[in-house]
Length: 285
Image 1 (cartoon, rainbow, N blue to C red):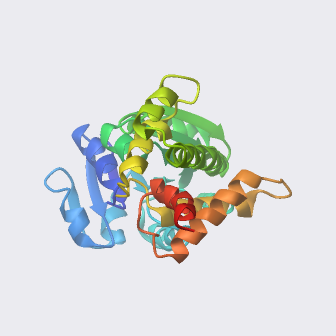
Image 2: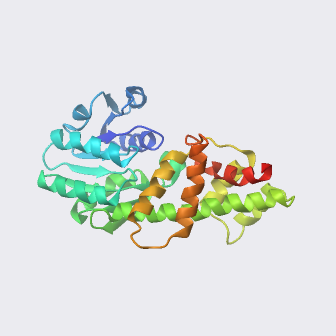
């Protein structure tokens, strides 16, 4: 069984690394806050440096915060990973950066995949993530059994960067959906409807969605604990805007502006379902 280095033990990374350890992989974990990596012991080995984490690994996985973090991580990985290791960044990051890292990795004798995930913290915990992969198909085939331990729908999208492009498209879908749920529930509240009953109606028809089922009830009771932080989702939306070329994408731009207003109010560490506060603020206006 391959040795796996896992960089990032946050809300998503921790359960993902645990799934690999439970499947029999020899997992070594690094996190910027050592305590988070230590929490995975005895299932995985926690270390204090990236160099120690990756030096013996056949496969290096990472899921961190921002493209700048990805770049910082792989500057170190490139220096100490063993020859011919497969490097796989699972962060939602820049497609442009993914292509750049792919070419740098190849020049150094590594293979690199971009393999972002969707499904939220519950998907990570349950091992039911959807994973979209860009890079060389031969490397994808090698890591496929590993990906199966973390996700249920694994899709090879093509050359380097296309995994990231797929994830950004996914985030655009979510933008319209989560704003639509918040907008509908605000409409219900303003017109004296029982929001919980209305949500059950949505869930029984063509308006049913993951966002309605999971974040809709949280919006109703104002449970804004993060399954996915606003600050991280806003990062994704801005990446999509950077990559949209000359496309007109009004839903993406409008929802991005809503989340920017919430961040300006200090809500960056709330869950994405807190978008309903943008609508509820109108009730006090």
